[in-house]
Image (cartoon, rainbow, N blue to C red; front, side, top):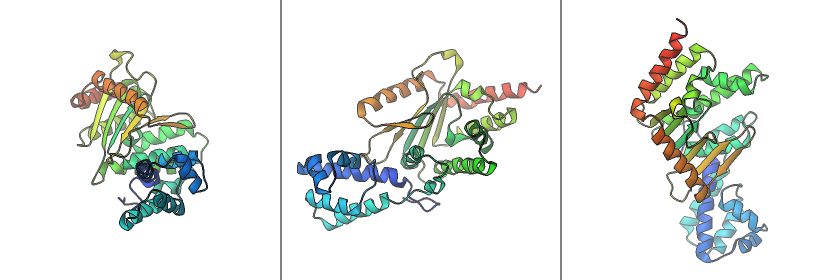
Length: 295
């Protein structure tokens, strides 16, 4: 999988997860403990656990030694997994912006780029994948008021590049639920908000984008705890991942029982929100309210 930027579609994050899942299956089939595997590669049980979860980089020698321990002698399959190990260490296109991107968000970009389904709930802002450049600039300035103009523009450009995945030949399904408050919050001024709402109306008509709005009258709802994203991948070996962003870090949740709670909340949000078919009408009303402010 490649992009026009020349990098892997999913970047190293998902490739590590995929390779780790293969290694775990092979180890369990052979009846080898994590402790035994760790000893072989001069590591620990904890290191094997992190490798199998795709949370560390892979040394090709370690992968080769583990494949031998697990009894994988088929040359074609060994070569495929060793190639995966090499690819997993190649940085995604966004790593070129490492000086302005924290590591915890680089991991998310890898997951986002490889997902077949991205479901997100937003409380304060329009989701990044649907922001206009002017709206994105206004949001970025909220957290980087002292940054040089060139850095702000790099951040805006990076956000715009992320959005290319929605127009690629194999785009993910993006399903967003937005609190009405996020759409009425004056970010960047009225002109910026009008253009953003018009862009959302256009996006709602894309075949791979579904947008729902939770109106004010619903009051409290299923995800009162805050924004989150739920990502699903085309490879069945990869678990769903929930991403919860914090002020200067993020949580990545992949335990099945924890993910299930977020999935239930997301389904309830979709029931409580106006249906996708009504979204252009709902957004149009909010847009007219902004236009009326100037009269």
